[in-house]
Length: 54
Image (cartoon, rainbow, N blue to C red):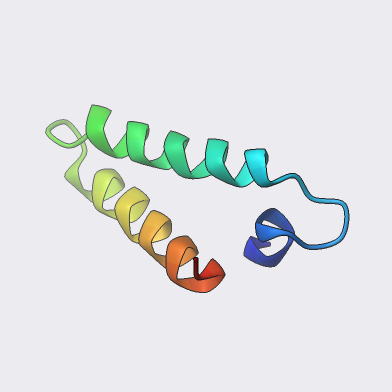
């Protein structure tokens, strides 16, 4: 899935940016009410960034 978002066939780089920004917004919004969800969002963001490289 990350491959398709990162530039696979028929993908849009703006979609990847939108998904990653949404993950960080959810992490920020839920950091006190749901720290586990926040941590999951941050890990997902970092994993995607490592998977796609630069």
